[in-house]
Length: 552
Image 1 (tube, rainbow, N blue to C red):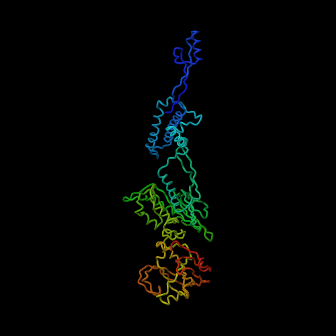
Image 2 (image 1 turned 90 degrees about the vertical axis):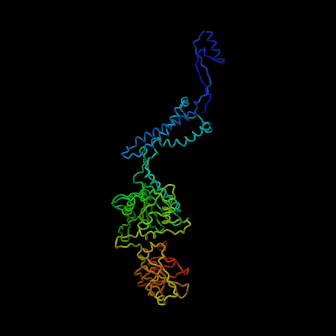
Image 3 (image 1 turned 30 degrees about the vertical axis):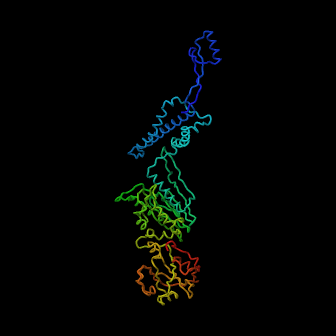
């Protein structure tokens, strides 16, 4: 320990004077002897090595302050702790851990070394010992880091006791946000809910929501990720808002994606720190899955249609449980893949320090990743609205997005086909058209897209090889799937033994387009859907709107 020579003043009788005396003291002693005043006492000054230095007082203060603050924390935690039968959440090991921190501090402060050290009253100037001497410099540095935390603990300002389930929920919120950032999104703004404290307990203010607003410049896609938004009843609901007509709903994570065309799609993620063991496989609890069905059915969005009526719709495309299941995600598939594809309800395992590739792949499938080595398809709202999980209507009804969806496709080459078959396309009397099922990339969505098709516009070659036009708009009577080998000459222009699946479209009456649309560019083009209104509105080939682009 650091020590220094300190002056020591003592008052002693004449017979205890030792050593060399100062001239002034020697004269006084001589006078007292002459006067026989032997009872007088004399003040002498000596120097002694002492550890009662400002640096040692500082170290003693640090040790005593840490011990006293731990005592306050333990007392406060015990006072706020509920009885086990009332839901007490602090275990005995928690208090034993705090006691194990306090014990060595108590032993240290009771050492005889500190008995000689006085109270710390501050430093008159900077001390080279505290800055440079081994041991002292370490204490000085650590104290400056520690005292901010001790102040917070001691004044009950920033310590919170949360269950693992609560912490897991917040971690999932931040983890999903981090995954979105890896897809090329940038954070535009963040809203943080206010916090209130009671003792050691910290709580979010009821009704306030934390949220992140993200944006991706490549496709002008905006995402808002909210934590525990509240959807409740309202006596005068507003257009464009989401409500629950029964009980208040508060999903853990609410993801809203607004696309470049202004349409918004929504998903729910709910964190559950529970696992159900099913034949050795970590599954989400059944009640958690059932809660996802409840969320999707309970939340209702209001929109105003042309006649001013407030139209109700269910805005949630999918609802998924996030749970701490353990899987080798690189070699296995998510046990909830089928339910996610079929009904939009399922679960994703999510754990810290794990790759969590299933949820990452799902988010990339929904929104794409411009920086990925995979082919990037610009995300559009259309593709979500033809999924099986979103096209489930009540029995006997059928949902569709567009009332005038028109298929634009090219008539097959005339070589080897019946001349009468090809002539009908030129004089607007064609009765059939066929196209491979594989033209629509995602098979589960192709059925909905084709069944929604109400018109067909066919590109017909003219007298010149490079001159191709659309002159007629056909009404679609029916659409069905057949093997190519089952198509007749009247339906396909020639026979074939190919068993590949084809869409067979029965054409009805035709309508001449006012100004023929000239197809420019390459001799072949990708099949796409547009609107009958655009085809009849004298638009050019390049100005035709495209629908369900990501699916074709």
